[in-house]
Amino acid sequence: MERRKMIYLRNLLLLLLIDLPVLVSHAAADDFFNNVEITWGGSRGEIMDRGGLLQLSLDKISGSGFQSKQEYLFGRIDMQIKVVPDNSAGTVTAYYLSSQGDSHDEIDFEFLGNLSGEPYTLHTNIYSQGKGNREQQFQLWFDPRLEFHTYTIIWNPTNIIWYVDNVPIRVFRNVQEQLGVPYPEKQPQRVYSSLWNGDSWATRGGLVKIDWSQAPFTASYRNFQTINACVFSNGKSLCRSTTTGSWRTTTLDVAGLGKLQNVRRNNMIYDYCSDTKRFPHGLPLECSLEL
Image (cartoon, rainbow, N blue to C red; front, side):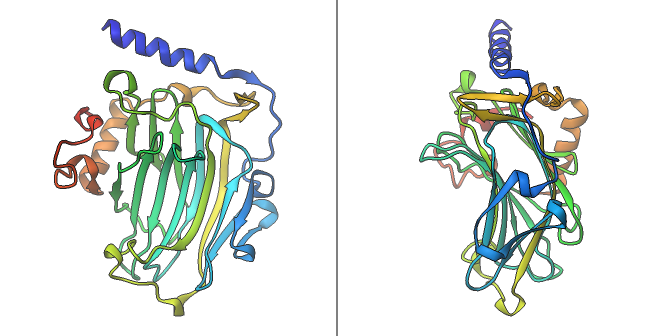
């Protein structure tokens, strides 16, 4: 009990070290012109509808991508995405947070395309201090090609939670002090997204290739929300005066755990914590934790 109290106080101290609140000017949350920049692919990345819509495309020559103009250290990040429709086999639509360098941190959503009528695979992963290999994959309870859905990352000193339409699908807890498992808590991260050719592995392990006669392939984005994230600037994580506080202490309550377990039961198709062939000398330490 005493150890749990010390860990709680440590995480509370981390939150107190974030300047709360400070006045940081910000543009409208869904204004891509002010919040992101197209970083590669040239005209294949396009912002339209007065900054309210962004589209990435992929053709045989190149894919495309964008990144946030700001870096963040803790927060809630939301994005509505409609992935590549129809025959999207071999395409990968990636949406993730990442820092820089060999020892980078990263929190991933990746949408692996499929043949028309076949389900998309949602691939998730997390890297901390350059170490990944923590994949979990899902087939969602809807077709993400048909309309926009909201994909959320809540990242605080206690845990990281992945949400789809406000339903938790995955949690990664900070057990650095208990188990020595690295946790992303010191490196600021940008938001990135890209659409690219992953047909060497994305669909049925690379057996199904991209049908280039269907190109260009297009993914669409709207309602990019970072108003509840803390901007990293001059060595400090600065929270906007309008930031609501709930994300800072968000963990999964009984209802949230029930939703998570339901997704794991009905929608999860791969969990690294169950892959004893991949880890013959023992599963990663965090796999010993109960949900």
